[in-house]
Length: 400
Image (cartoon, rainbow, N blue to C red):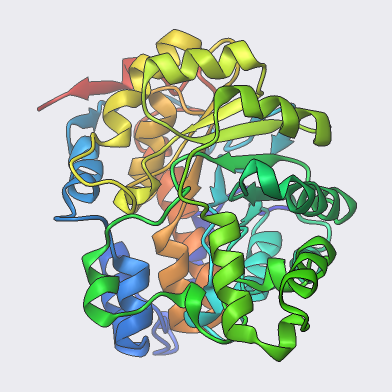
């Protein structure tokens, strides 16, 4: 059963402090990045922190949160706020989820298994990336009875057989929601990776390519083309899988019909940044969207995701579920995104920093910290739940 009061994590720490036991990981979100840098290689840290171009989109994501301030209400006699939310037809204990991040074994040897295990323990949905270093089935085993969703980097139409194979594997392994990323049909211009000459997808190992290496359709195609098994030429297989999931050209809105024929659960489009695209998502009949710019990793000079969230919610929020990511670092950020209309907020880099610092325990620490911060931020503001009835734009003021 979920802990109904996440802020009590702090009580545990203070109790340990009475025995002169200090926490092994900082509670200050910006420390997570610096501490991760201390333990990661230059290649891995550059990949994780890296953003497109001059990092302007990344900067805009953080600046967007500072434009809004929470207005507290006083003398509200109420218990600690309920953090339960209903998204895509299912109730969840908390309004956050683990965002899809690939190649997690370059951050920690336990990679996706550690992150999925932590998500299960903390009652937070885990979203598996197609660029995972761990198979669909192994992550499902680590997730156990936890909520899990599958994120698709969408192969081109000539590889529809592989797309269907991935979707069928995900369904068999208990992934309930399909999250289709729209903004990464080719990797963005990331100076940190370019400076290091580093792409984790092109190395002769299994980092970021395990879903392909474990997929029967891809393995059959590779054998037909090259006359050898994947294991006999890892470098060529890695390059071919990278080209399969990052084909260089975008799909069309019309192509979504193919995915809808082969997925019978909720479908969410990730990477929406305009009202026009949000309305198209409604028209094609998907169940949700993620207002996201990939944390600034794909395209420089872009608008902060939070800056476009309100207008997108106003346009389509009663016709599908609007989720949010990009730039979230603490509990107050989550509160602001929810107040502006998001049903759920995806946590990205912070949990990956936690993974790098301490594996599964590090991911749990980050999730518990953000949830504890969120709960106290709401409680001290007189906000009784994350329901739109209590947490909405009336509790915010635009200050910049």
